[in-house]
Length: 271
Image (cartoon, one colour):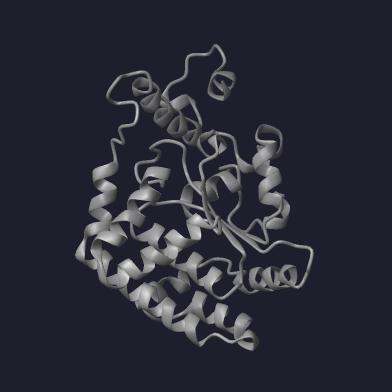
């Protein structure tokens, strides 16, 4: 319905339509072509690519190191060190040292302000400590979010972590509920420290501390500034969050409505 309203009666081509709309529409057409079939209605055309990304030796090593590092940091945490330890974790040089070389490419880093806002809300006794993550890619990236979620819950920095994924296979590697469940099961199959992580995350899921949601809005072409009107239920839920983390290029494009902003336009102007 939302796609039809925006398309109107004009004949659209790749060169006559907004890129973001065209991409969203393409994936909607793919799922539309298989949704009514007998054998393909739940088929993920991109599943093998996502599995290969998770199963590479490099990815496994990074995930293993990330789990061990998170567990070590969480065990050392004291109440007095909460804020400082969270800052260290988010800026840590270990275990993924390669990410540090990208710091110089960050145009605007308001991490400190985000942490300040998060801890101010934590001090409000009437505010539930919910941390929301709008996901991007499956595979090692999803594992990074799961490790971070377990850290927040284990250290009582959050009472609940909500992961927002896609309703159907989208933009090739975006996380669906099936990807989330497959990842947890794969951790159990791998054994070692991976199984330890599986047991922790499964317990969080069973107690509703870790929740996966796949609201249909995340696959709509509308920018997020229209969420309040298009998906008021989702807007209301996100409004209750202590902090929301948006991951990836697609989320960024939708946050800024994919417009041709001048590079130095401050975010305050875009509200």
